[in-house]
Amino acid sequence: MFKVPPISAQRLPDLLRAMPKAELHIHIEGSLEPELIFALGQRNNLKLPYATVQELRSAYAFSNLQSFLDIYYAGASVLLHEQDFYDMARAYLGRAALDNVLHTEIFFDPQTHTARGVAMETVINGLHRACEDARQELGISATLILCFLRHLSEESAFETLEQALPLIDKVVGVGLDSSEVGHPPEKFARVFARCKELGLHLVAHAGEEGPPAYIWSALDVLKVERIDHGVQAVHDAALMRRLAQDRIALTVCPLSNQKLRVFPDLADHNLGKLLDAGLAATVNSDDPAYFGGYINENFTQVFAATGMSVRQAYQLAFNSFEASFASHPEKRVWEHKLKETFERFFEQD
Ligand code: HPA
Ligand code: ZN
Image 1 (cartoon, rainbow, N blue to C red):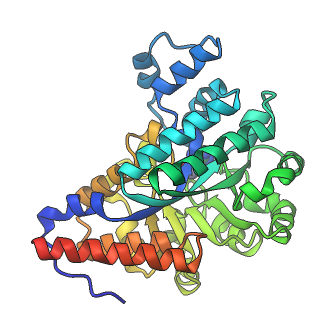
Image 2 (cartoon, helix red, strand yellow):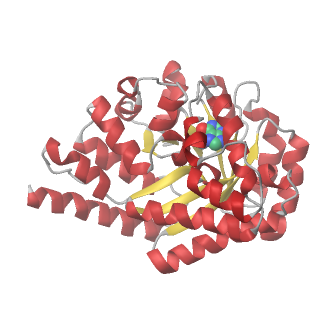
């Protein structure tokens, strides 16, 4: 393991911004900024229930996950054409590159769109073309993870998978999101088993608001490779040991947890505890247009609030590459760049 050099604490915010990183938990519909919602609404001749960008932004005051999801699904209703999906994803990728994101695995929620009559190929082709262009223009690596909405039925998830099959080469894996409590992972056991047979990578949101039991069943029933959020694992010592032993990554989203009142005060966030227990935690933005910041803002705010260390910064960035579904050679290149950034900061200290 790389011996992290002693860099002065006052340079930590700059280091957090400069260090190369991967983002593994970003819902592309959650990157739709109010300005883009208005621009797309106008382009598609839609009438929005808000008069101005400011009015829409001022509606972003959430009390829990469901209160956010209601506004998030309404915002996504401006997406109709392939170019709309392209513009949304291209805007996110441009923003992520500024935060020194070298690789990102992007969630999308097809059922939010197919339910409104938008074709699956419109969604996937628009997002995929944005990923290809961003790789050419910015050098950023980006792949797509199709998420099933857990408040909908198993049958709807199977139908969604069926619709995506002709385009499945453009998708690296599947996930599970939306309203957690009352919709345990095992509801989707059969559809995840089918996805595994198809060779897709598997992830699921679990332990955001829901209990540790949902993390257990995401691991043991769905057979996921990463847990999205997972912060409720601290309430179950046996689960913490399992996650550490099997190096199951948690894609933690500090500003999301603050805004949805999982940890109303960021100073109480348990990210440091998860790392101290030997878990492969990572930092991510979840829905940056709604929660007040992209990935670097998540890093700088949670470090400022909790007093985490330079060594923990390195560990989080390293974990993000290691937990990604990229190839081993790609991971080694990114991890080398990460080391170089820390050495450069040390020499300049
Ligand atoms: N949790 C569940 N579903 C979601 C989220 C989240 O944080 N963001 C977008 N869909
Ligand atoms: Zn999420």
